[in-house]
Image (cartoon, rainbow, N blue to C red; front, side, top):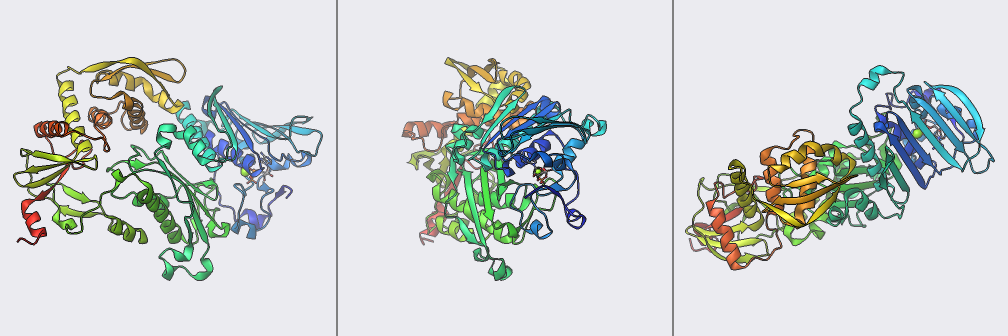
Length: 593
Ligand code: ADP
Ligand code: MG
């Protein structure tokens, strides 16, 4: 379709507002234009957080020479032409406003050429006015260069954050688009340095490795490829008229429950290839992880939803990151169900426990005053998945508070995860990881207080690659970590050299631990991270894992050390270290009383 200015009655239907908030919004619009133009190769360059320069080059269809100027007119688009088109948008752009809005607040150059023409055109604009137009050669495709953003609107310039923060937004944007379009090759350079490059293999998994790293990606589970739901088939029959029914497909990858992060930064949501924000769907995903993640921790998720374009209204917000579903409850249920099924169906055993049928939720209690979370068995899980929001968590109020752990006799280990032991008042099931976390936490805390931290020098120093975002947080964190027994120094470029770590920390977990500390710092609330939080993170990464076999002696030693701690019943995250089945409950359950 040629570029045309939308007739006024259509233009007024377009959600009004500013599209250019910051450099990343310019990058977003230009990348979307490249994708809409059918590009397979998209290169992005930013300088000084994008204030100085943003350049997007693509090998898409280009713009015919005689239409190039029109592309910069307000409401000029080749993607829709009528009001009805707004109801079934299949392209990322449709508003015809991006190029004109960007040009109004910057200095723009656009070089474009279509395959069929021998020469293309180079246009230069300043503050929205075309100042030069030349015929130019070049390969088919389009290069848009945006310089000195907001140079003529000082008030808006003032609202930009630091270069680091602005860069972070663009990096995240690129991560998102690379995940949404694994079949396209993306390349991002930041101040001349390569930040992200994807192969265009078509496999989301390959992109995840680039974005999250191999270690994290290996803990991601693919959402079942058969997760197709009819909107009218999601347990919402009463609310969905048959005429609305259409297929909702949910694809992507979600982290196993063992993979969790301190921030929501690792959650991505796409609808028909559009990177969106949606509180309700984020909630659906959180619900799917209910009872499976420690409190305050967030899953890693990349969720793609595909449905008929007539089922979504994308003309809600000028940035097109919010949308409205015709059947929000159907989409909510489809997402929650797909994610939940994936976690339950594929997660390693460690993520779940089954309760013996004879012991009901109310019969379990913990030897503390804390509320206890009883995990669901498979049947309950299956039932739960039928309902979008329900009582996924069974709680009981615990027994009277006790300060000290009684002497326990270790009987053995089950599932390479729990230590079974007997005490004066019945059976105790101890979570080996949580218990060990508590022990290490208190040891480290004592060493800190006494300023006698034990550190171990690594035989082979370890190098760690950082993302640009992590690098910016590093300075203060390095000083902070010294007092915990770390010896870490910048090692040129993006790297860090780790020479020594706290004695409790195993070398295998150094990388993930440092990544987590940087994540916490990146939340911006605590730089440096609080003492207690740092101790918690170190303890968590140092503690024995679920899945590790313990000899009876080792189990005994662990319980003995737990007895010595000041808060043996909870791990530093506040989760229980054990559950207790009293003699009375045993008798009751076996019908002896
Ligand atoms: P919209 O994308 O909403 O149509 P824009 O202002 O972003 O509006 O772009 C205006 C028009 O310019 C587009 O409809 C498209 O025809 C053309 N255009 C913009 N960028 C490109 C590109 N990279 N390749 C080909 N055509 C482009
Ligand atoms: Mg556009």
